[in-house]
Image (tube, rainbow over all chains, first blue to last red; front, side, top):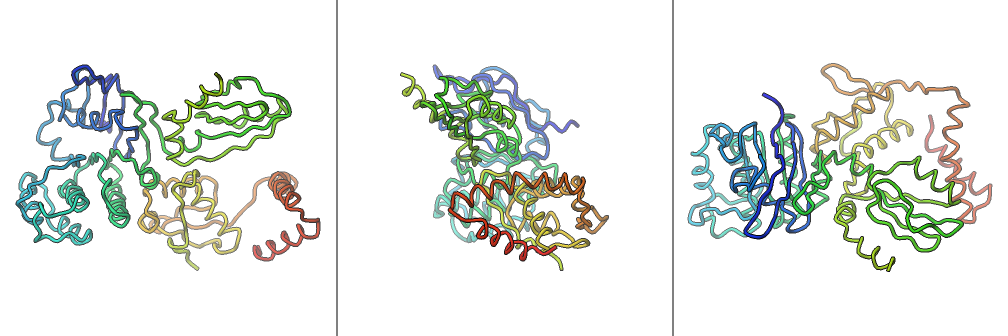
Length: 303
Length: 131
């Protein structure tokens, strides 16, 4: 078996007139912990549902464990854990009976492990599911997705309603999950500090396509903000490779680049007798630069 | 003297990859005499659990340190700090230090400190980091 876990090729999905996925390619290998980032409406949930076979792609192919997403067999599903954004749980069941009920669908359900998670996450097993808060329901959904020890965990904004304590417990269980080095996680979230802790890779969706995919550390190494003060007026464009944003005002410039390279910068400071400072960016700032939030201001200054 | 995972700190949102933060702290502990040749590093698992970061990140830091010959893998026991053998002639090593010192001196000047005051700071730090 190859260690390719998720594969999507030229994936398109259209809802009536709206194009959501516009040719998405992505390959995720065993052992990777991939954070899926993107602005609202960039196609994260649609992508997740397409690869899991919950939505039929308009065109293109996608597969999980080498099986066509639309045609997953029992063994693939037995190795898959999924938490959706709006998990529909049976409200009239108690927490305990819902875990046992869910377990009945899996050959390798580990009720002892589930009970220990319920305890660790302070969920009362005698409570009715309908009476749980949104955050508690999210916790329960995550536990239900872990109970059969899946090899692939797919989480669609699983922690949006969790308090900081529960979020840290959730991260801890993800870290435990990845102790088996072949286990794979794909999870979308807007909480970038969580990703910085657990993700090995980041996939960035931009208007239905893959804007960036690579190691988190590489991303942090390569995306930098540069401030330049030159002895003379700077040209309108400095033509640095991989420029995401460029604001040039007389002899000052503020740039964001995605292919930072020390040598290029040294050349630049020689050429314009400039002093330069390079700013490290965290994932949230990188996310903002990659989404081009600041690029509108660039247009204004040019006009 | 064994070092504990709780003695490390990571700042996930600092803009510096976490594995580099860990490498930096281990190097600083060695430079400061808190970690000596023969000391063991905490296990990858302990570090991952205590710091709340992916175990792969810790492995990556340890592998780099191993590659830089700062630590060595001891079968069945983990990572052990090696005796440091600085590479290059002393002249080369001094050359390597120069740009870092330059930064510190420029900053000292900006703060309006004179030579003696700057040297006093350096001497105080040298006291703290006894070889």
